[in-house]
Image 1 (cartoon, rainbow, N blue to C red):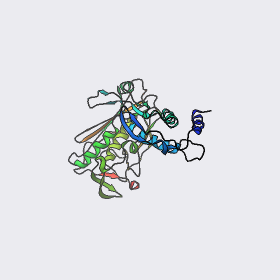
Image 2 (image 1 turned 90 degrees about the vertical axis):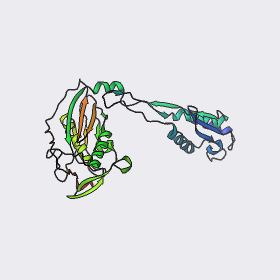
Image 3 (image 1 turned 30 degrees about the vertical axis):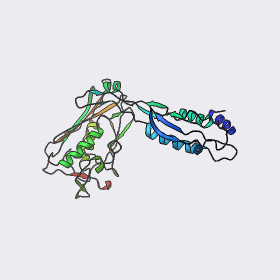
Image 4 (image 1 turned 45 degrees about the vertical axis):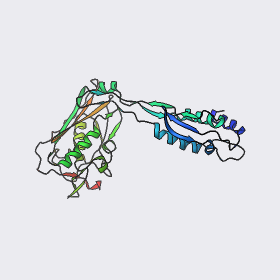
Length: 310
């Protein structure tokens, strides 16, 4: 017989409306939920008192929202030094439930310290140190630095890709990694071309980042899973070497076919964006030949978006 059922049967001897002193839930000495009234957590079953698990689940959700933290992967700073990872935490729901049942059955403890479990980062310093050493793919494209909005969008999208690690067999989606391009995230209005017409839209310019990533990934011999070209040619990459993206439309997706993780590094300087793919010295590279990008750009370089992105 499981402990939950056993406790449920034990509670049969407790009066349905038993009311203990209010409990408080804390975490590291800080208040999380100030007052928990036991009478609110009995299931409405006449003659057979049980804890209402639905209400308890909602309470645990409320506690989890306040005490859980996400882990942070190790990363490389601007000078290439490793910034160590940080572990996160999650609520140990089984331990919390046992503690809460004890309170409901016996009226104690009235101070419930939220039990936490560590959540380890996927990328630690050891992994990062091993895969930062060998550049396996590199690509650079160029843009008109005087278009400040477009330049800012390129910098934001590149920063969102920087330091991402793709493990063997995993796929990376540009859209899911960079996220939705919104004004709240700092993206600005910049020129886009939709169905051959010139418009301005939030996030104009990010396809230069996805195209630069595509060419670096292709040079590194990674597997291209999903890629779409623009509805008309663009000038920042050679013909046929672009990768259009849109949150509600095309995506760029690749997969790591190697037996070693790969690391994405991005660098943005006035007028250029670079993507470098790195990995372990033990990786057996199978590179592909990719033509380089031209540095000659028109005065007002426009970002083109595939009509299907609308």
